[in-house]
Every structure is written in C-alpha cells, then in structure tokens.
Length: 226
Image (cartoon, rainbow, N blue to C red; front, side, top):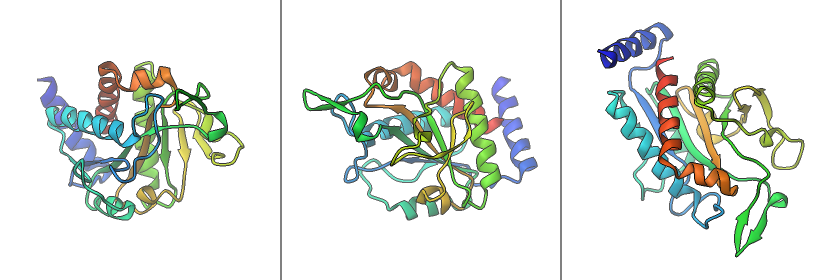
C-alpha cells in the first residue's frame, strides 16, 4: 500500500510540475581514464562514484522509480555527451566524491590526507535552462540529507583559489557553479552531488559504509517524490 501511494504521488507531482516523462538519470562521475580525486586509502574517485551510483540506481529501481545511467562502468563518455543524455529526462544527477585544495593535504605513506573538510556538497548552474527546478530539487535533497543527520561542507565557499563558489543555501549546502559542463548543458534539471570528502579518513570511512550509501539513496528517493 505504501509503495502504491509513493508511485501515485510521484506521477501526480511530475504532472503538476511539468516534469519530463523520461525518468531519472544518474551520471557516475569520472571514468577509468579520468579517475578524479584520490582518496586517503589510495583509491580513485571514479570507483566510489561507480559503487554509489549503482547502489542508488538499484534502490530506486526497487522502489519502481524509473532510472538509467549515463554510461557503463568501463565506458568513456565526454562531459557534453553525459549532459546530452539527459534529454527528455525528469532529472540529471551526477555523482561524485570530494577532495580539498592541495595546500590542505598532507601525505602519509604516500597517501593524500586532510581533515580540512567533511560532508556533502550540492552544485547547480544558473545556465541550465531548468535552473529553478534544479534549485528546487537541490533544496529537497539537502532537506532529506539533513533529516538523516548528514551535514554539508562549507569549504567550497572559502575565498581562496580553486574555491570561492557562491553558497546559495548554507543550510542545505547548495553552491552555484555555472560553468560545470554537465550542469549547464543538461537538457533537464541538473544537480552535481559531492557525497563525501574522501581525503578525510572519517568521511572516507562513512562513504564506504552500507549505512551511508543507504541514507543517500533514501534521501534521493525522498527528493524525487518531494
């Protein structure tokens, strides 16, 4: 009965907000050739992104929420092609794991480590033609994450080189990043989600835990039916 109610609400809300009919698309950030950040345990970011993206996709599918991914685990896809794959979709969500600027990293046993930042961050672009919907989804995600005890990081708003992003919503951890290709070129509302700071040992241990992945998947599900 609960599942039936969720599905009815999802359909009604999609119709009411003018959402696209093509479902939900997840983009596992980076790739085997473009690995992203390196964690404090020496693993490449794209591996964390793949695992979390698959976890979220499976969870949403089990809730009968239509979901696809931009690429397969070994596929190389340009940022523009990732964005264009959102055509006709309800929402584009790019999954990432975070790091910090190099001046805040120390090397322990040749591994990058920092306690500078921890927590999630959410990015949207005002150049996305569905900016207002993107912001609405981003806020719904932030609220859902905070309801589960997750906290956002403020380090991307610091007035330093490589950061200095406009913090649109401090409470929910939402930043403006206009020129991110996957956000500004997406033909759907679009969010880039940095789920944890993997150079931070505490955050990295959270990121690999079943509980943390479940909390994120549940929050994304709640965001969709918000």
